[in-house]
Amino acid sequence: MMNLIKNKKIAIVGGGPGGLTLARLLQMNGADVKIYERDLNKDARAKGATLDLHEESGLKALGEAGLISAFKANYRPGAELVRIIDKYATILTEDLATPEEEIGRPEIDRGPLQQLLLDSLQPGTVIWGSHFEALSQQDNGWKLSFKDGTSAFADLVIAADGANSKLRPYVTPIKPFYSGIMVVEGSVYHSETASPRMHKLLNGGKIFAFGDSKTLIVSSKGDGSLVFYTGVKTGEDWIKKSGINFSDKAQLLDWFKAEYEDWDPIWQELFENAAVPFVTRPIYCMPVDQTWEAQPNLTLLGDAAHLMPPFAGEGVNMAMLDALELSKCLLGDDFDNLQSAITDYEKDMRTRASEAAQESLDSGELLHSPGAISFMTNLGSPCDGPIS
Image 1 (cartoon, rainbow, N blue to C red):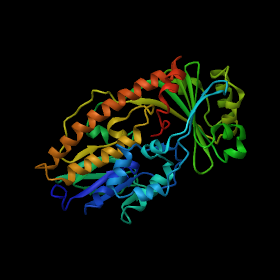
Image 2: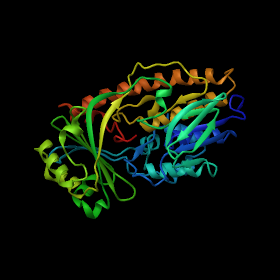
Image 3: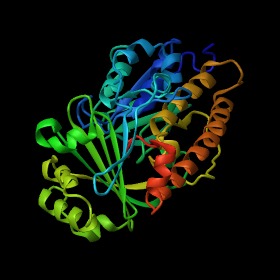
Image 4: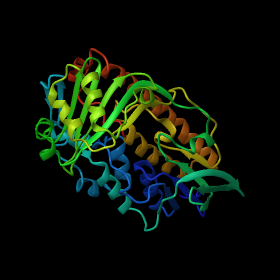
């Protein structure tokens, strides 16, 4: 074990669930790992919707990392409640997982998941405030340069820096394409008092509302807040063309009233009580047939490797499974060198990701179609929300 990475410095760029999981798995086997994260600290940005971890991927990785007990202490029983609702706020169906289903896909908020992974790492593993700027070859490894003028050396670099990865172009020039769906995200804090009708309708779980080929997804969080996402099919340049100031609640409410014209007024509570600014998220996807030549000491995981729409709930699960599979390749004795280990990992990773990406694209089309309600009532909850 550890022959390929023995005495090697490993740099993971990006401290999301995938990067943190990989660091944990490697440190358990004695590897020298640092995570370079651009955020100044773990609380630097708001956390998105609740996640459901899948038994065959996210939970499997946590199990291999020895963190199932920590997970059970932090997950949210009951948060798997899903209500399918039409635009008139009529509950069409609701689904509360059976105990067996809850075990297979339990829900956890992003903050607690991040914290349990951070707590599992050796002190000083994460170098906060390290905003990656450039990569250059140095000896047989890499020099990583950061925005604050600092730098670091690594024998092996793993890009876990998400959808807008700055490291990806060092591996492949292939770029994502726009899926045709635009999301506006907002949060309501203290929803029980700030938006009582919506809080009651949500009932601690998730809402999937559909009408006029549009979506409105609402998710409760363990801290008493909720997060919501509108979904509309529109052009990639909508943000600029709309002329909306996304820090102006009144402008967003006017837009919502016009765009969701016949929807029940209860949905307006979300915009009336949301914090500002709102976040716009054009939904992108990497080509499902993408491929590239493996490098000897640089690779990718998660959204940096295979960005996809959120409409199949695979984002965080794929990233954590990537971490598990990459760790096995790096720590095993099946390969003669790092490049062959990376080649094997990337081949399998692309195959898995292509299938999930196609499913996500197909789900996104169905959810933003006249048949969305029929699709959802037959399927149940397909997604975790646009930040996965």
